[in-house]
Image (cartoon, rainbow, N blue to C red; front, top):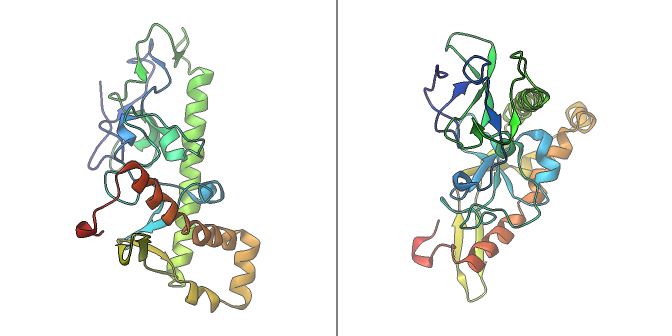
Length: 258
């Protein structure tokens, strides 16, 4: 079976294979019972469509570098996800980012020089294959079932949201609103030795206060201002996530400050 070009696979994905009725005529999908691949992931990409939902559960930050991405933090340290237990289960009633719900499917180019996107999946996920039960992907005539159409539609919506996210980031960069982030979190038993977290970007609130006139009115009209405020408000949850790590025994030691 052919595979899609994989110069660098996205987060979670071990392989990518184009879905087609010839090779996968008898294949089905079934729910993922255990998200083992999520246990060690502390930062999950999100789109602007999700900011309002995400800010209720996770801090929203931006990755470092020239091409920042918005991230929902499910943990503050590498390899720590405070919402996924040792069995790969999510116990809390939280919003699950679309990037997670999309897996193991995604839209990808079949050739590096091509522009068209095809529905692909990770064959190592364990949730797509020839199962005795599950939801079939193609009917007896080789046509995509409603299940497949729903998967495709979800992935298409995700790509469209990705374009809106890029436009949002471009606007922040245009007005130089992103700055290197730093959050210091102290524990009650040792307030003089806070844990300092860096390595991310956040909106510079001082520069935001200087935005005036037509720009501010346009942002208010387009909803961009709501997104910025959702990000800013969500940063208070950094301390909540840290408290979860302390309770779970996954917080860093004072000598290993972040």
